[in-house]
Length: 328
Image (cartoon, rainbow, N blue to C red):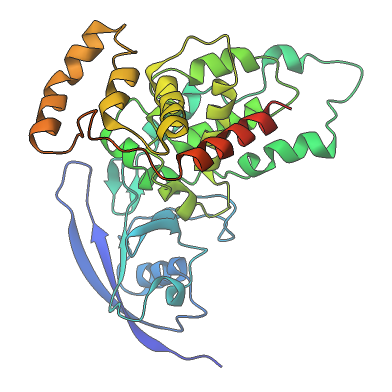
């Protein structure tokens, strides 16, 4: 049974990338359990204000065109029912453009940076692997399964819109690009795996991710970008030929300290990671002011005050068991 109710839509409007945004209120009659956010926008555009700008195409969560922020979270307007995104205490349906990209008009954003960052990971099977041969480029079901999740990405931009690192860093390529990066790394037909691992170990790629999980939460097709980023990190850490970067040393030091004490001793952590165990004088000097502030504010225990965890032995045994299983 259809239940039509009055829904208040609060729409962010912006005439150009240089203008100040404003909010405009619209009212529509709709069934919240049968009406998508995109349906609502089309209804407003057709019946109340034809000047509203937004992108749409397939209306089936395939093309990714209608990505926008809906009640504070990015997603596909064609996929979200109004009743799904409006909580019990919500009085308005708030619709805004994606974040981390400049607005062209209303809900339309400039995707240039998004596409440029994707190009940085070179998301294509290598040319040498695609030389025409007399046979097909066959894959077994097992080989295909390794890249299936990443291959589902429709490049809608929802993950990039919610990415905390992209909000503050121009160099980070973004979760969408790294999901595609893993898709190529996992493809057995590509012959540039080693080169790719070296590239993604550089600044601006996987180690800049803050692991906030926002990308996983908003992905409309379950690509789980953070999981794909973690898989690239595992490939990097498993490569003994790569020079150890600060990011790699950070990961190794965390594990080593937990193995030693059951938890992390902050007085050792910075020295080992940034100072490279007293081998990097410049790194040591860079964290010296922070160390002083931590001591003065009581945030860092003195070596004689630090107490090992009561579960240190169990933690060490667990880590060693995992390492042994991985090396089989």
